[in-house]
Image 1: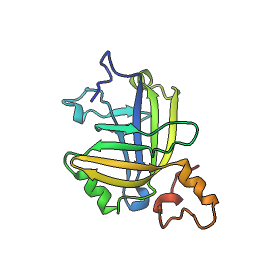
Image 2: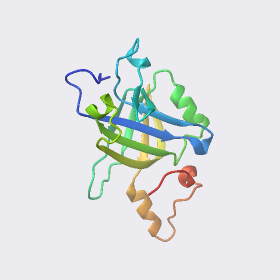
Image 3: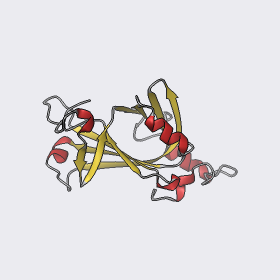
Image 4: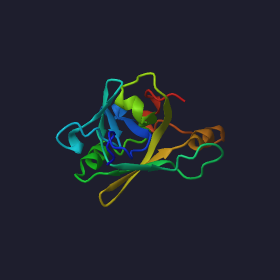
Length: 169
């Protein structure tokens, strides 16, 4: 996992927020980097805008912008203890849970610049799958929402229970 204070860390840092409130859970906040200020990287959360983001190894993909992106965006998360999978299973894999991906400049996190450049992308959780120690969190895209316009195809809270939560499109 990259260290924010290293010379070779990428300039944009990903912050991932998943809102499990509609399923009786809380709001989970993760980052794919660490400050290394604590005893170990695993216990050194990144704090930005007063919120703590737990370091968790993850990769993201399928986030092409513009045009029709036929690849679903997703996060591949290392869940070595199985705790995240158990939590998701207890919530029936939380379909429709609001997922926010933020890209923030490294310098803005290190200086806690609350007015820094931030790109925010909002999705909902579509499907969770597991392969070994890796969880794949597949997200619903704008194409899923556009399908609501066609007769007979409606996104409902039955399919995505968290649609009535704080997610705004």
